[in-house]
Image (tube, rainbow, N blue to C red; front, side):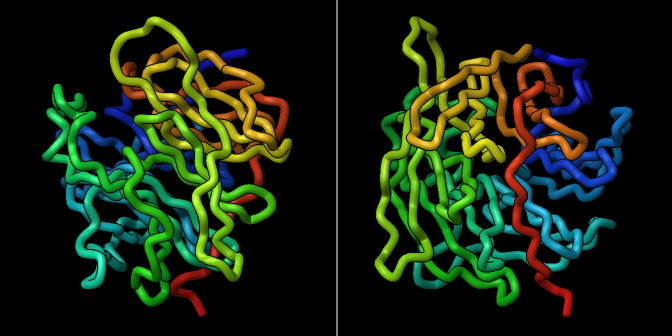
Amino acid sequence: MTRPHFATGIAAPEGPISLADGSMYVTEMTSATACVTHVSPSGKRQVVHKTGGRPNGLAVDGDGNIWIAEALLRQLICVSPSGKVLATLHGDDENGPFLFPNDLAFGPDGHLYMTDSGLPMVDFLEGQNFVPNFMDLGWDGRVYEIDPKKNKVIRIIDRAIRFTNGIAFDGQNRLYANASFTGEVYRYDVFSTAAPRREVFGNVLQPDTQTGFKGPDGMKFGTDGRLYCTVYGQQNVTVLDAKGAVVDRLMLDGACPTNLCFAKDGKAILVTEVSKGQIERLDVPCAGLPLHYPSVFGS
C-alpha cells in the first residue's frame, strides 16, 4: 500500500539515506541543484553540500560523514555533516580514473564498495536522457573496493559490466551489484580466499511491450532475506527471494525510481523517483537489514 509521499519537489533525487531521527539525506542530480540535501520528516529541505557536478549514490560512515559518488566530476567525495570536504578520490594509477561513480555500500570489513557504470557521463547522457546509440557504446562497468581510511583503491572486483548500478550486501556478507542494461543482479563472495567470481543471482526485468529504457537501479536487503530493487522505467520495486526468484513487484506512483532505503520508524521503504521529483513511502513486511557504519576518521 502506498502511503503519502515523504517529500515532493526534489530535483532528480537519488542516494537516499534514512537517519535515526526520521530525516533523510538524498542527492539532487540536476545541473541546477547538484547537491546533497537533508530532508526533515516534514519534507523541509536544506542543502548540505553542493558538488556542482552530478552527485549520485550516498553512504554514511560511523562518524556521520557522507560519502558521495560524484558521477560528472568522476570522484568519490567525503564531506562532514556540515558539508566540509574531508577527502576526494579520482581513481588510481594502475586502473586509471573513475568513469561514472554510481552507488556505494560499506562492507563488514570497513571498506567502501562502489559501482562505476563504465563510461563518462558526457559520452552517453544529454541532460537526464541517454543519447540515441547508448547501447552500442564501449561500456566498462566496474565494481570497486576502496579503503576509505587510506583513501585508496584496493582492487577492481569485476569489470566489463553493461552499466553497473545498484550495490548491496546481504546477511551473509556477500556483495551484490546489478547491470542496468541486462536487468541482471550479480553476486560476489568478496571475502573468500579465491578471486571473486561473478554469479548471476537473478533478473528484475518484466516482459512487456513498454518502449524506452528500463533497468535495475539502487537496491537494499530486508531482514526477510529478500532483495528490494528499484527498476527505473518499470515503475516498481522488484523483490527477489533468497534464490533470486521474483516474488513481488511493488508498484509506484512515478515511473522512474532510482534508489531506496528502509525507513527507521518501521516496516517501510523510501523510494527516490525522478520523473515527478519525489520520495515515495511504501509499506513492506520487514525492516531493513542493518547497514555497516565503520568509523573512518575517528580514533
